Image 1 (cartoon, rainbow, N blue to C red):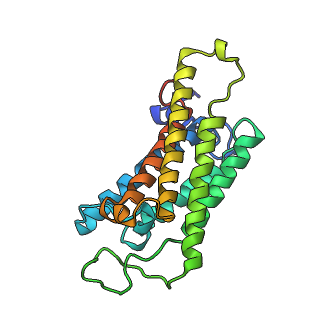
Image 2: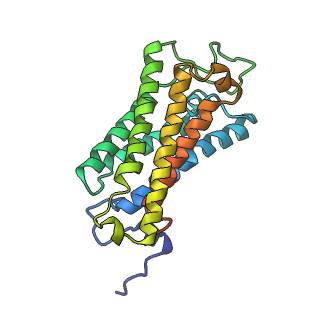
Image 3: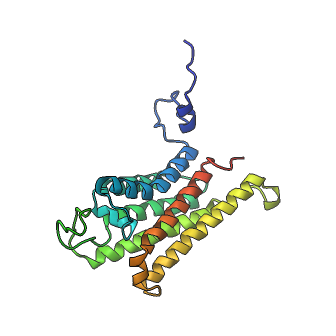
Amino acid sequence: MTKSTPSDLNSVLKIDYEDDNTIWLTNSLTLRKIIGIMGMALPLLLFGFLYLDNGLQYPLESISHYYYTRVGSIFVIVLSLLAFFLIVYKGKEPADFYISLSAGIFALLAVLFPTSNITDICGDPAKKYAVTILPISNFRLYFHYTAAALFFLCLSYMSFFLFTKSDKSASKRGTQKKIRNRIYRVCGVLMLLALIVLLAGSFKIIPPSCFKTFPLTFWMETLAIESFGFAWLVKGETLFKD
């Protein structure tokens, strides 16, 4: 029987039908691409679908607050998938696995312990997009903040220190690898700067009014997760491939 020619989709996803004892998602490059795409798509999906559903034309206070809206399912599904993909990611060295595993666990904890409510009353006419209310809990709130901060810290560390590793000396690295390393470091620094701004807001070094007026939390989280997603796309050899 003539062997069929792999489709473009099969080639991109690197699906091997020869071995029926494995799942398709076994290639690390494919996993990195999926993680990158999902990460970069999350803020856009949340804002876009809530706009379509409710007509809301401005972002919420933070990405985490979308948990309490009609698009909360998108937040939970995408962040949970990202978490599990990070947990199963192996990398080339033990450090890759353990840092990625930690990031995945912290992402799951951020989902399991949501941030503060959008409103305190059901059916708030001023915030019709809010559909869920949880009992007030300072423990849940600060646990969420801690898990989210550690999640971004792990991702920043991976981008700056782990993605830039090479088995070749600096003088023997190709032009594309040098470009990729610059991108990894920039993404790592952007994630760290976003986290610093959020921490400065938590300690009121930056006035709370700035976070209310300009939704700084949302934009800093978006900056961090877009940087994270772009770094993983590059690591998946979607861009600047040798």
